[in-house]
Amino acid sequence: MRKKEILVLEDLLGSNKKIAADIRYKLTQRGILTINLMSSPGAGKTTLLERIADYLKPDYKMAVIEGDIETERDAERIRAKGILAWQIITGGACHLEAKMIGKVFPEITPDLDFLFIENVGNLVCPASYDLGENIRCVLLSVPEGDDKPKKYPKAFTTSDCLILTKADLLPIMPFDKERAQKEALEINPKLRVFETSALQDIGIKELVEFFISIRQNFLHKNA
Image (cartoon, rainbow, N blue to C red; front, side):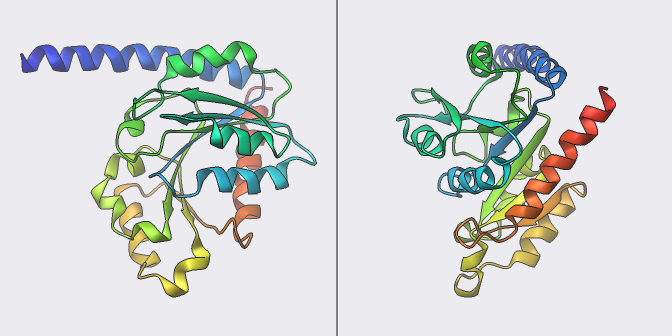
């Protein structure tokens, strides 16, 4: 019985990888940088995207795919910023899958520069599913505690950057940012680390500049 369960899981992930690879190829050919944001619930993904939009809007066009178990609240917040947003309601599933992104794909306009995917709030399941992104970022908020990298390693080992959020709370919360960064880098030395506060606009410019540089690099490679 256990062997059958493993084979089914491998088949599901294999199918997901094929769909994701196709999505990534098509979006990259259009010059669209796709960024998958993962975090626990309440880490500040939507608020971070609102602040990122303020920096990108003058010169770049972005859109957002929102993943939630229920409601369109996050998509409505993004649309209120004048940003195109699609809401995927999973109806109980704890993560997005590439086939879900594929259903939205026909509506993605070729004039986009950046496509952000805000995954369902969860540090476990989303780490196993490629969504066709070019970059995967894991968010860790100060109120969550500094022990998450070793407790949920796959979310960190499969990511390209670690975004520490709500850094304005560091003076009043028992969060050891050196410990969090050290443990994250021990399990993934290639992580780029950004310390941010969307509320106080700390570190957002540097993060946006990083995204822009990644997009410029892959545009150059595909020229």
